[in-house]
Image (cartoon, rainbow, N blue to C red):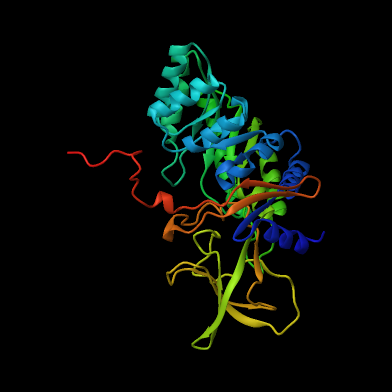
Length: 400
């Protein structure tokens, strides 16, 4: 089947709105990264980009970044081993830290965002007489991580905690970065890692680095993901520090595997503008950098049909003027019942919408593989039950 036929079949089989994740494409993307980086550079999948892919990515990458208790529960439920997860997150409560370390018996590497987090992890290791592997997160220009002096102090006093293994440094400063920015960050990290060895007598085994590679979401954008990765690999090779680098990424792995399908429900003309209304909307779809539908994502009208190209403003089903998916986009063959296929939505796009707004449904999500076929991974869910008072006795009434 052609890609068009696959997407149309998905809409026929599961309805719209619908998220389709091509797991063959996700695997192909990881293999492309491996070909460029070789086996000495590790890969970490940031599951917040697309938690549906965790099981597949656990088999393709070296580890999975877990940034919340909900993400931990997902990994726990599907049996991801501790050695495969990297516990992260700016807020990790003491009771959460203990629950995670209890479950994995300290076998999960953890990043450390603050002195209080370090203390909680060190205390668990002392009480249980089990080692924990920690990555001290170095602060950039954000709320994440610790200052250099705090990291130096922990490293100088590392012998105080016999069960604590400071294994690496963690650094992530933002997303959608250009190669020049990544190169400057690696030069800075190279100096810092060298200073730790010179000043503290400590060789850092691993650097967990989030490069924030870009993804080509919009029409006219050049897809530079693999080329930027090659430049990044060259910059890593120029570092004087020769420990192991693990690249932590989400969108770079997953964006290209996703398609969002929404059906055209109504067409009209308002004040000289062609208006297209779909059964989806901004509560189910988000592109990084999109502002009021000004940028045109890569989109296809299905089934393709001949005809004169018209300029359309595409709106979703929400009762708000802000529900503008795309404005002034030239499209052919748009009619009632047409399917609009938004491409490159495999990362974040389906996770960052206003899912509960106006109590619309949460769309179904499916996997597709040319070898394995279709797999329903989430049924359509009604959200109104989460937006109303529970009077069925499950929640207590008023109290003083």
